[in-house]
Image 1: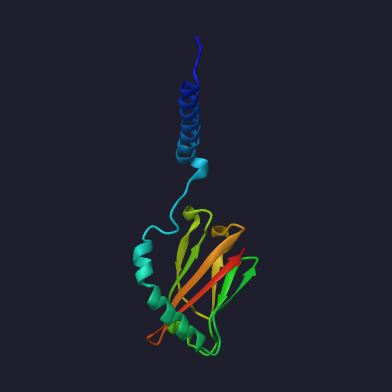
Image 2: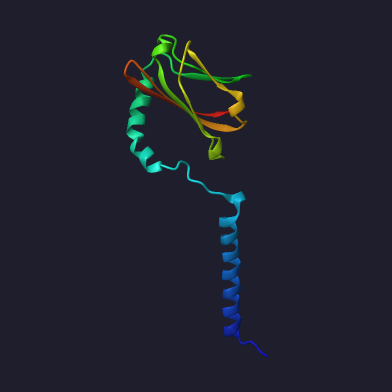
Length: 148
């Protein structure tokens, strides 16, 4: 049986489409190539963007900003020394871009100006640190990309 050029073109198209479909299906099914959204509720977070900008602007007017350093026990956050630590409330959110199962949130509860985030919850690598805090009715926000 002889195949003419029209049949050859159709067979080439079918082969190419099958080849592409194989890769598309294998990439969407394979757990190794999971593609999650950055956050589940990204639309509501986008609506909060202006509030976050105002909080960051408030934080820029402080004499001393929140600082962090790595210690053997974990990450140590230091809040401004001129503020009463018992009046500082809020939360610390650590976001791991490579794995959303590692994300966690810690409530701010201070007896002195330092907050320790234990090493047992942290893996080495990149983290997005977000400290959303309040003092005497003023809202502040500190964001930093860190490598632990």
